[in-house]
Image (tube, rainbow, N blue to C red):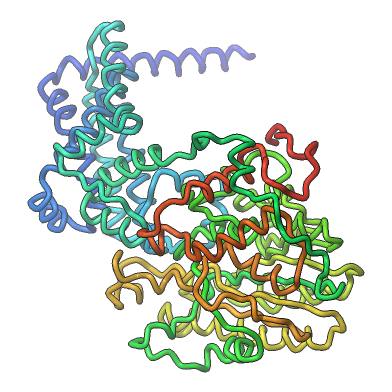
Length: 616
């Protein structure tokens, strides 16, 4: 190091020390201003986070006037968190900067999330933070002048606090005691029902159980942003998945009857290909007659329903969380059995999983999973790799990596459904064994701001394109000299923008939204399939795999037999759709056993592969 560089370094250090001395003097020069800054800050940042949601000061004041106790709860919680940060950092401006960043980041995320899909932010959504690059392609992110002004106001307050440099002047031992005193009530609001129930009651926080997305959104209107975030966190923790009481081999054996009809016939020995097409955001909006939707958008779908079997199944989700629907179709189990998590694949034990692909594999089928999107999204490639698929096909537009063996075309933002259909045909033609395929498409995923019309018009144009490809796909299947059975169903109604969506125009709410969980489907085959066993009544998504098994006359073990009995006894088991249907302890325990527990129920996987492994 040269002499000049040493001198320069000393100069920088001396200047920094001089700045620090001058900055520290501000603390003592303006004690009243500093005290005012720290007293005002909790009210300021709480209000800014809420005003951002209301998109204006007047609506915030109106909420304040109508729900003052909730605002007091927000202020109480914000103050406790601020005192904790002061005890932790001692520096007032650092504490202000940290809490301001967290509050505004959450508030802005909530604003964009609701504006994107009409669903409000809950803390468990933050698990998707690792997939933020993927989420950017979904979201409507609009930086408005209002939002910029709010952020500048917050930055100005941070700058003010930096200039005057308020500090929390107490001894270290008292800082520790203060921090602990703040942690206790915050932890109690999440972990201790007796405590948070009393607190919520005192402050009038809405604790109504939200059994569907609309009821959850209504709770947001009642609690607004901060109280909603905290109350739903309490609810999520209380609803966390735990091992059922009396869970053991004996109880599972009692649930799963060992006596069952042995069947190895496959309709006289013929094993049809089985194709499950779960079409992203595909839904039949004609159920809402007041929208006057033209039948032209659904011509291909209607034709397939006329040629095959048309029915209605109950999806476990609305507008988002495709993996809920995917879980039910892949496992033949209800997400309600594991407390309806947003991301059920995150709950699974890290071992080989008894997904239904394992059965087909055991019956001599080749198995494949096709999804024209990133393999890392929802950790699909890692987690679904344990489900018994011989082949997994993904496509990543960001990196250019693709497992597709057919030319990849796009329609809108994502891979064209026609490309997926072509891939399915290619898999059937190039596989010697009969094949079981599950595909989750991507074409019709939001955003729906691409096109010449409004959201719903653009969406319907894309659905029409899907149906045109569907007609070509089924014509190609007719030409293949292999018996093939197809289930086509949408995973959920599409995510439409919050305040301006057609759902709001229809006046849907937590009591009249059942049609948004009813998905029209069709079963179609290029051979004379027998649909006589298909239930005429609506059944939950997770029963559809057993409907397919009945049609192809597949072998049954005691587990499959038990689930087919449940299909008769409890045709719909979805809290989002039918909250009046009580929890079924046996069905819940069986679901836990299959995907998290020790798999005491019969399954096609050798016991040595059911041992949990280390997560990668």
